[in-house]
Image (cartoon, rainbow over all chains, first blue to last red; front, side):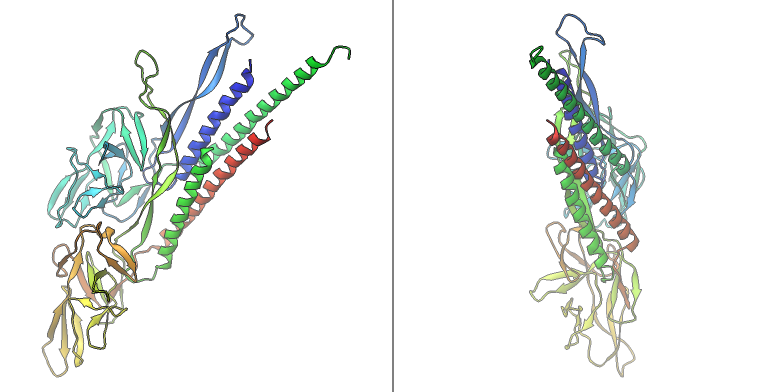
Length: 247
Length: 261
C-alpha cells in the first residue's frame, strides 16, 4: 500500500484548490458586490482492508474538497454619485431578469436603457416587488430611491425595487458576472435598507487573503517535504533489502 | 495551477483600472469632462462539486457546492454624469449647464454632436461656435455692432446694439437630453455622439422640466475629484501587487513540485 504518498497527494490537490480560491478572491478585489469565497475541506475516511487493526486505528483519512461558501460580511460602501447606483446595507439581494430566469446580485450598479428600463451592466432588467422589470418614462429625470427601495421621480412613485433573501443563505450558486442563482425559494426582506448613489465594494479582505496565501504555500511545501522524506525512506528500505546479508 | 491564470486576469483588470484613473487625472482641468470608472465582474465558475447534487441514495443533497471562480473581467468603463463645479470666467460667451442636458453642435461632417463644454466664441461671420469652430445648434449670429451679449437662464440670447436702448433677441439656445446619457459615444474634444445605448435626443428649452438652466459667464469644470482618484490609484496599485504576489506564490508551489523526486 502506498498510503502515505496518496494521502499526501490528496492534501496537495486540496491546497492547489485553496490557492485557486485565494487567487480568485484577490483578482476580484475591485468587483462590486463580490463575496469572498472560502473553501471547506473534510476528511474522507477509508477502512483499511487488512483484518488486523494497526495501532492508531484502521482508517485512513484523506483530504477532500468539501464545499465552498461565501463570506456574508458586508463590503465597504463607496459613493459614486450616480443616481442609479444602489447599495444594500444588511442582508438581501437585488433580483434581475436574465435569459435563464431570475438571478440575484449585490452589485447595485444599474443604468438606464434607451427604452427607459433599468438594467445591470449586461442588460438584465432590475425587478420590482411584483417581479416585473422596472421602467421609467422619458419624462422621469429626477430619480430618488428611498431606503425601502421605493423609486420615485418628480412625477410620482415608479415602483418598489425588490430585495430578497434565499430561504437558505448557503444555497446559492455563483454564475459569474456578479450574478447568483438561488437554489431554494426566496422571500422578500421585510425592512430593506437601500442607499442611493453608493456601490458596495467586494468584501475581500486583502490582508486575510495574503496571509491565507502564504499559509497555503507553506503547507504545500511542508507536505511536499513529507512526500520526499517518504520517498527516501522507501529508497532506504529497498537498498537495505537488496543488500545481500553478509555481503 | 489555475491560480496563475486567475491572478493574471486580476493584473489585467487592475492595469485597466490604472489606465482609467490616469485618464481622469489627465483630464482634471478639461472643461465639461466627466470622470470615468472601470467596472469589473467575476468570471465564470468551475464546479468541483455541484450544489444540490445528491450526496446519498436517501436523497440528501449537498447544501453548498464547491465552486472555484476563474478570475475577473472588465465589464464596462462608465461615465459618471455628476454636475461639475461651475467656475466664473466673466466671458459673456462662456456658458455652463446647471443640471441635465447637452449643447448641440454641428460637426463638419454634418452630424450633430453633444457637449457640456460651453466655452463658445464667435466665428468671423459672427456665429456662436465652439472652441474648435463648430457652430452651435440652433445657429445664432451676433451682429458686429452688438455692444453686449446676454444669455438668460432659459437660454434666450439677446444683444444690445450700439445706439439702441432696448436689447434685440438674437435666438434661443436649445439643450438635448437623453434617456440614458451615460450611453453616449465619447468622441474626444469634449464631444459625444448619439448611440444605440443612449437613445434618441430630446430637445428642449433650458429651464423647462427635465432640462438644466444655462449660466452665462461660467464654465463647468471637470467633475474629477483628485483626492478620490489618488486613493483609487493607490488601491489599484496595491491590488496589482497582490495579484503579482499570487503569481509568485503559485510559481513557488510549482517550483516545489518540480524539485520533488
